[in-house]
Amino acid sequence: MMRSRAYKKQRRQAFLFLLPGVILTMIFVIYPTIRTFILSFQNWNGVANAAREWVGVNNYVSVLTSKKFWNAMLNSLYFTIGGFVILMPVAFLMAHLVTAKIKFTGFFKTTYLFPVMLGTTAVGLMWTFILNSKFGVIAQFLTSIGLSDHIIDWLSTPTVNIWCVVLVNEWMYAGYNMLIFAAGLVAIPRDIHDACKIDGCTGIKKLIYVTIPLCKNMFMVFSVLCITGCLKAFDIVWSMTRGGPMGRSSTPAILLYTEGFQFKLMGRSSAIGIILLVLGLVISVGLNNTLFKPDQNQ
Image (cartoon, one colour):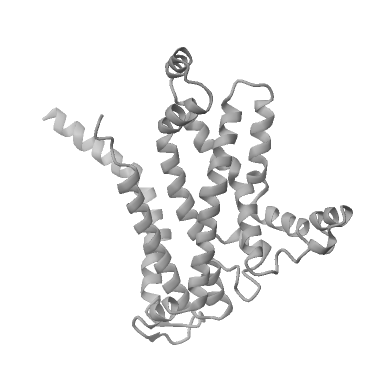
């Protein structure tokens, strides 16, 4: 009887502690999501007292048959490719440097994290000036070595501009992702390092057969964050190109913003948001089910 009362008291206390978080989640996540889902089946120009016309799935059909949407999805794919091909190995290498017992590791940690601390808008504006075709640092350097003919308008040339933004994005978030891999590296027991040294497993062989397999969970976490983050890329692209020229560097998040707040197509904008939500959930659940499976041999 006493245990039952204590258990009920613990449940009440747990409920009271969880209640503020549940209320905030309901107000700022669940309720807006439901309203957005309903709005995705309507036409509305964003004016409070304006009439809302029920159009069924027309907004979804319009989005999914739009070239602008699939171009934005292609740009998200570019971000994902850059994340796995450039960002992942660079962040892993940086994590090796900051966890190694060498001099100036404190300096390396501060330097690597500095771009993240600057803020996305500041980084975007800084690189906009650096990449300026008239007075930018790169243009001045190419001119000084006699390669002025190779100067182009980096942020206004289709295909080139999105890759410029991708590279800036990888430069900015390398330090953040370094922390993910560093957490995995420092968690490797010292005994394993000593055993590798005794067995003569060093250098590249140790990296391939010991370090990377033991950091498998960190690579899984990186994969989930990278793919879902690329789907919602907005601020770095907006601060550098605003999705131009003619939407060629647009991402789904930028398309959502422009459709809703520039063209006043709130229903279509909501449909894009719901599509991204569903896509993000499917990818996250799929990655969790495939990458985070427990080892059957354990």
